Image 1 (tube, rainbow, N blue to C red):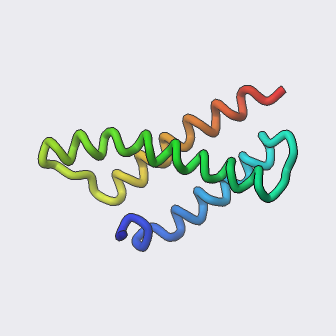
Image 2: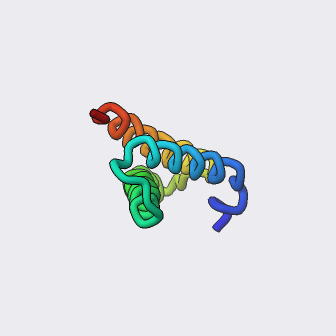
Length: 88
């Protein structure tokens, strides 16, 4: 759990940015829609980041928490930019 406890500010900024992107890209801003949107962004980012984590773990060179946070952030950025680009 050091991934969360060592990077509290990073997670706070990522959560704030996720909420901002969710508000901008949501058709209707409600608590349930925001919850689904934020959860979806984080699930996608962590799911995509799990691929390099697994590859490096199997190779015997596990990622550091900083590398893992950077990977999660890049995956999050890919989804956020894609969502922002398709706004009507």
